[in-house]
Amino acid sequence: MTSPLRIALAGLGTVGSGVIELLNENSQMIADRAGRPIEVIAVSARDKNRDRGLDLSPYIWSDNALDLAAISDVDCVVEMIGGSEGVAVDLARNSLNNGKSFVTANKAMIAHHGMELAGLAESKSVSLKYEAAVAGGIPVIKGLREGASANRIERVYGILNGTCNYILSTMEQHGSDFEEVLKKAQELGYAEADPGFDIDGVDAAHKLAILAALCFGKSLDFGGVETAGIRSIMAADIGQAKSLGYRIRLLGMARIDDGKLFQRVNPYLVPEDHPLAHISGSTNAVVAEGNFSGRLMFQGAGAGDGPTASAVVADLVDIARGDSGAVFAMPAESMPSAERAESGNREGKSYIRFVVADKPGVLAEITAAMRDANVSIESLIQTQKTDDGSVLISMVTHNSLERDVAESLEKLSSSSNIQGSPMVMHLLSETD
Ligand code: NDP
Ligand code: HSE
Image (cartoon, rainbow, N blue to C red; front, side):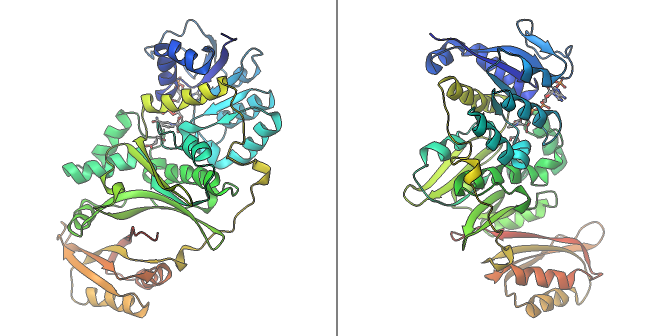
């Protein structure tokens, strides 16, 4: 057997500790498959004395993660710290500049700096790998970068955030309270250090931008993802969706429209007979449509220590085997920027929910604004008198331009009868 792949690991939290446990437990099998052992030689985290349930005595300890990039006999640095800026990206730059391969689970960093880091890795002829950054344990990066590489991908979409899917499906199945389920997701290790990244759709947007770059060969454009999260979804929305034959899922969706890149993260009403409606808990699912492969669906655990460690170590096995090749399937310097597609041109049905004062004329005010913006209403339900005397009005529109729906809501934005912002969710259709 040839010399081991020597790694240095920064970050020993949920994922970093999982990586050490996996490498310890499956070491012989991994060495057989990789053709050589994978050995951790150095680690770094903030607090050396924290009890992690791991024996760290075999490893060099460093208080400063950046030291790991300078250890001469380290072949590959693994970053499991998180954050788009600061130590994570400094460590990536230093490691690649020093000719070391780099593995990360950090989607925020790849979404913000992926093009620069890919260019750097390619110029140094080392690997930059990020399987765990998208959809946890699912080998979706490998599947798209390698397995589907012969296809032109027409669109890619799916459930990209385990925390949100866990919250939505648990609220749906058990009628649980949002805050209570979020707390449980944090305890289970699914949520980001700042769970706002999960519930406001930012984490899913990071992952979607990475998938879009990989699938369409366009320069990664995180700033071009229209992003909304699940914070404003009420139990009543879940109930209404159910009565209409739908389930609410936070979806990321990217496609090329007339040569322009459309990217959006938004809660959708997914028809009950669609496979994504049946994805529960922290499971993720990514659908990609290739012009020769047809529809591919990747499904599995989207978060948590074991599944994420599995994806990280798979990257290490690839590096140990001598994997090379472009980070996003084609060389970073040959990926052009894409013009952004405007969502207003899109047509479909929308679910809109208002919280309104329970008094005469309010419904007429809403429907008049819809009429004036050329939005036709397919169904409408008024429900649930709340403690403060307000009521919920939920409606589904006929097929309408999103621009017209936005115009109708703009007309209503100054109404003193409507509380807060209306909740808008699109109904997923085959043409989305
Ligand atoms: P945790 O918060 O559990 O762990 C973060 C680790 O980083 C801790 O060990 C912490 O040290 C260490 N750390 C923080 N700051 C520094 C620093 N300046 N120098 C050295 N070490 C530092 O995060 P996760 O393990 O959950 O996430 C890690 C990465 O993996 C993130 O990018 C996340 O987005 C990504 N990810 C997470 C998934 C999950 O399910 N949790 C799934 C997929 C990706 P200490 O322990 O001493 O405080
Ligand atoms: N916080 C992320 C999620 C972790 O819930 O999906 C996996 O990337």
